[in-house]
Image (cartoon, rainbow, N blue to C red):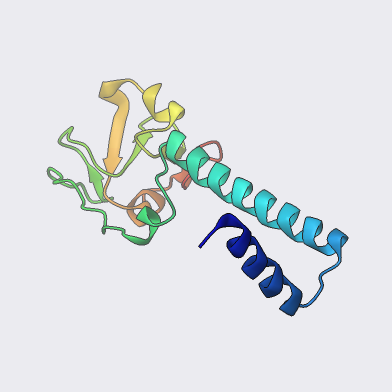
Length: 133
């Protein structure tokens, strides 16, 4: 089979296909290419930001509460160990341990709570500048 025979077969196959206007073909290729570029950029951006791919978001694990020490009557940890939420003895807001406000609280003034409910029962409110509360 020569190159001329292959070219002839391709031409006869193309004749049987319906005619698509050139503008529609260009528009279709443009939409497909831009959609693929956006999708790949989105996935790459999530991986660079440390959020993982969308598939890894489907697999989650339940949070495990760290062991707490002796809890006081308000549900606050009075032993100095860590919990899920932290507040200051002198303040009115509670934070996640990773928030900037929690990092500014001195160790002797920290009160730890096992849950948001326990912090709210003790009279604390969530900090507005702490994402995730």
